[in-house]
Length: 286
Image (tube, rainbow, N blue to C red):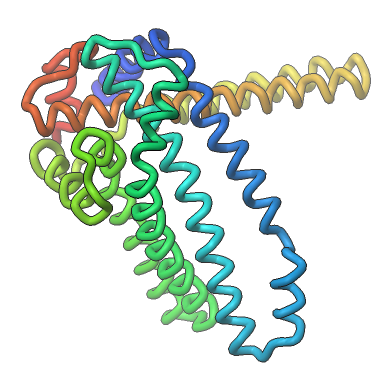
């Protein structure tokens, strides 16, 4: 366990160095979350669709429900992918010795809009299929429901693993969705394969920061509550801000590290900000 933690901490520090050189990358996940929230609110109880659902038959309701679900998945996937492309491009330029500005990365992502939209459509389709499996599991219940629920979770897990390097493939190789998936799978095969999940160090360190922060935050809220309602509210706000900052930071660190791993897998050498011994041992099976 100590070996896993020490390696995870080293990888986090190396990724953090890159983040410190391009602090504007923190804006990308923040904007992604903001636009996702606005998009979700815009689709919440749309008047036209609600009217159609009220007048339609059960079959129409189901079809329209799936259409709306697909639109939600498509929009959220598009927003997330767009800003992930920005993070990867900023990292790519930094690895190559350059310094991409915030607008440089936005402009680059704009040149990849067809790729981003195509990938978002594929991602939304898979998401819809997984959603339908989940609904089927809920309807069946019992052993059958448990079986389909297990299948749905395993398929979702497998999808998240094989697509981990899709965005770097889109940025570095300008690939469409299916070629990007193939490139992502090849990158996994060349280095870590099945060990990816078990040794995902940044996730471990992120969990530690969140747990420690929440524990400290609870004690802080209790201490500030002595000041009255204002103190309690202040403590809650500080805790929320801390959790959001951890999520933003590690979202960027995840993109930086994945980009470095993609470069290592495809070029056989470490990016300038990382040592080859660290990358090659990042997910080594014990």
